[in-house]
Length: 431
Image (cartoon, rainbow, N blue to C red):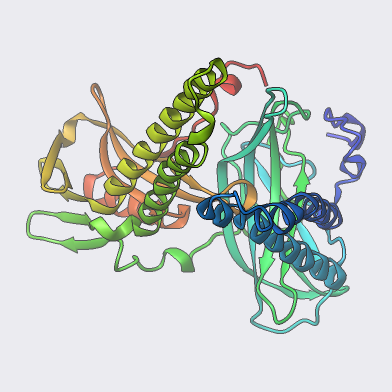
């Protein structure tokens, strides 16, 4: 495919015509500066000159209002960090190889880094396929960035023209979606480079084209694929216990493996429960017997109901995440998967002869965009019936692959597949 054949003509990415991609560091710093200015221009006066000076404001409401200027200070800090990172590294450039990338082929390139080369230095490279969804509803617009596919590797740097350089090459499954024009539901491919360093960290992103080129594109100069091996070399001892028994292989996933996620859900659930309570108590004087009071009660009641239901669901999922364990046994006959939730057990069995395939897929996303942390679900797909869970909450694709390899060898399945989920709108072809 020639440069002039690139079908994505977004004017925000003119460098796509040459395959030399500039990072978004400058744009990101100005975005954070703008957010910090706008947020603090509203939040700081609201707290210091309204909430603190008005004696009629409920003390609890005052403390809640204090969260907004604190968030403003956090935005100022984030903007300062991003500015210092830009001052140190500027806008890095990624030279793609091949250009463009393609599903079923490779996505790779070289990044020059303006730091003195030191042997043994590594950087983390992440390639992500992201589904950007914008929901428009008058003043209540929202934007989400869901990682559909992600590959991460820790790679050694080499001597470069500006000091150091890193080369990467990822194999992209053929079933992944391609880059689309910007819209309310679109696909973008992003490379993220990161390394913690004294002073300002290296932390930049690049948006690059991954297109259907007819023939899958292969890298010409980068000969080795970038694989994260060290991360999956050993199992996290507090999250997964693997043991070989006289009957076969056993995986035990203790209840505490998702403690961070469970505690976060409990915290957010409690917040969703407290906010409507504060709303109903702090503004109870407004709810008089007149027509306005009745309208307030109706809308306030709906508000309390919605937040209460969300809070209850979050608390329920938090308790489930904290207190569910999974015991998977693989024997000569097949699989027995037993889940225990606060003493309640749920058992599923599957004969070897009935297993059609093994699969792993994303089941939980923490965060958004290129910095999302993905947790995976492992399952055995029968010829008929529901899949049997072989593991959940698996942190990162390298560990999921390691477990799938162990499971595949124990079950006599040398191959497995990676499933993916797209939004309903994207699947229907409206992207």
